[in-house]
Image (cartoon, rainbow, N blue to C red; front, side, top):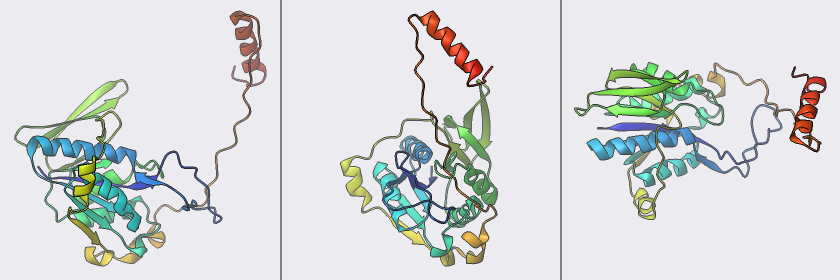
Length: 264
């Protein structure tokens, strides 16, 4: 079974994000870049399917040269091949342009399943997976917490939580699945895996290689325009509820919620 995993490199969730002087982007100096956490679940699930059915896992990503590090991390975990779409014209691309570029790189590959994270923790759009499936004309399951591939490798059942229940959907392959927390527990890259990753096949592609028009990607090709980035409002100081007994504290809390917070 051949599986493709699309991953995105994002700022570490512990990184302090600062808005750039232009008010429309972030300051990238000193940011620690990591693999999008939701994409890690896709890498892990692909590796488990490879261990069960055989085949190959190919990781595809888009971005500047630094994204190579995140692809190498996936290779160190056990993926077999890496593809990076890197072109200066892609800078500032929105989700739709990203999906178009990924589709162009994937369409001629041999695959049974494609995994993407259900969203990126930076832009938080959740659009690339569905758009990619549309461009490739394959079924898509979103926010999946369990994947069951049939023993003959020709169909898949995907479990999606909905309103306290679980929706189970089935499709023939190939298909695309967006992964969610709870699907699995991603493995760590081992030292032998890190050493092997340096020798695994890795390919870089430009827009010209993919036959894409630079005018339809990047800032000029965006369908969604960023008008302004603003930090969240500062939180007010906390307040300690005074009182000799739990009953007194509860009464004081209720009073403050009513008179100051205007909650009720």
